[in-house]
Length: 234
Image (cartoon, rainbow, N blue to C red; front, side, top):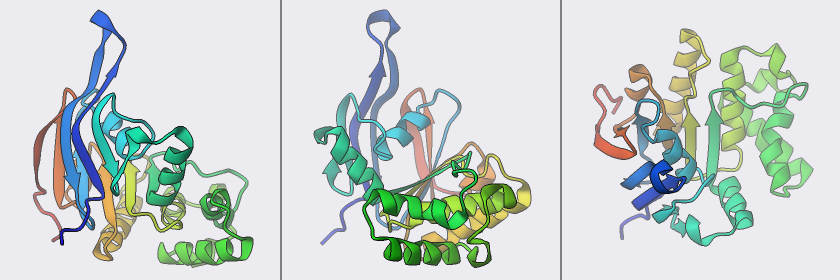
């Protein structure tokens, strides 16, 4: 029996505006990402990669076509059910970390579990385990301003992982990092994928894309190539 894809886009279109002012942000995209894949999405500004990220991240729905996340058709869900799906199935990592200031790493990582109604003792245990997984067992009680950029991004990764999502979705995750911190975060992504985690990384950096096993390139709202990454680690 074939495993169900984590992501399946079928003729997905996203338009904004009307008449002569209409913008086709996505123009009939077909894309399947299987469980355990590591995919980089590349393209210039306006190529559609941010719109694609919003669809697969359950932050938006297609104007037409289908977007299935772990088998659920997002167009058929109301806002509440979309939010539930996003919280349970997707771990999001952003360029700007999006950590709460004056709040410890541990409390930041606990946050998605609090939203999900997990009891305090259980969410504390799971948050500690997630921070240990990203190599920050000795930084549990540090606030963001006491951490390096790379450490802050690893806290953000731990927060994304703590709900055990089927998909880790990262938007320019190394864009605000120096070269050493970039290497640390990408090594962590490699480890997570080796453990079976599905990753989709939106990036404009070839060095980042080389860690992925597939590179999807976009232009004018369409996928123009989808191929095995050159120099992929496996």
